[in-house]
Image (cartoon, rainbow, N blue to C red; front, side):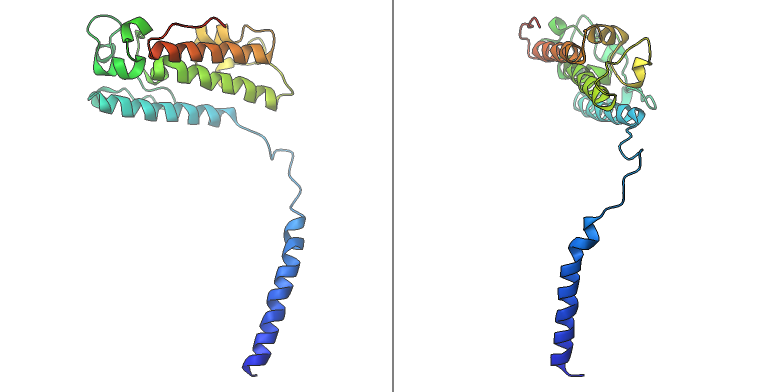
Length: 194
């Protein structure tokens, strides 16, 4: 066979492939009913893992990473002596709580949940409230029907306050507003009433 014939046959093959390619992708397989199922356990684990990573960076910058208590599947913590609630503020206090850590209100049990003075935790819970609603026909997270710790990562007090709204958007606003105020506290700015 000569080169011209090979070129013509090759051209037809390429043309056929290009012509039929849209047909090959035009009918994707039908999605199963579980195609959009989301496991909140995986979401929470990823959120906690990312906050532990950031906490690791801050403790490394403060020179106290060797004292971090790693908690499998939960937030990493550090003994309070490395980020005390009162007294002499350490470098970790400034990294966790901001410009004026004593005014921001350090935790008695510092951990990854305190990043940006706790704002990261509040913003994450605000996001999870909306995600839960999107996946559950606009339903609020109802503590009488579900274990809130399956969906939210904050403290029980913060969760109780955040879920005190009459709608999903009020719950979102509670968490988001608390996150904004935590961030303002990080920068030693006055809080805002929401």
